Image (cartoon, rainbow, N blue to C red; front, side, top):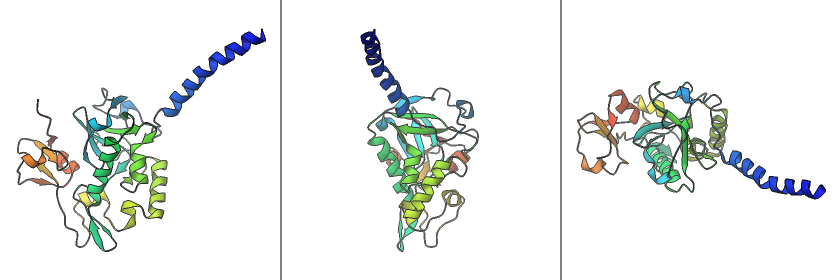
Length: 243
């Protein structure tokens, strides 16, 4: 009888370990009340996986997955044309944030998992989809905030707030100098001496493009747009891929 019990226990251990690994590797949602019901237009995206190289980056907090433009919940990164001041010199902090986000995805050792974020806490327009994303166990927004590449959205996640305070205390990234909050920059505020640049363009057909898009160089337009949010306010859609 003892031998039988010992055999049952030995056979059960691998199964228990597998269950534990499954739960350990599952991404943790940043918002306490995140729900699929809070994210319009995302019913088909919930729980979707994508290879990192298939995630297109528009700017430091906006991506495209399967042709759909999505905001990453819980963070606000400097805009593409935004500059910050560090040791008396301006640097392109907005472009830096976008390139860091692109690097996360391009070098992702695991598939990217995205799920609907908490729309009520997101600080975004109610009709625009927002997502939380993870690469393995790594929360993308948490990584961006911890690396000083983005600020937390107030009230979205206590963890994000704590990570931002830590980055600020260490003077990491955008915390190492002077900057305008991205929301204020979008409203037109600039640092003294900052060269304001608008790095989105409209194609005259109801679409817009980010300067990070390989197709950007093929378009000439007099309509310069300073942010993805501004493009949406103009009722523009991101230029879809060619059929």
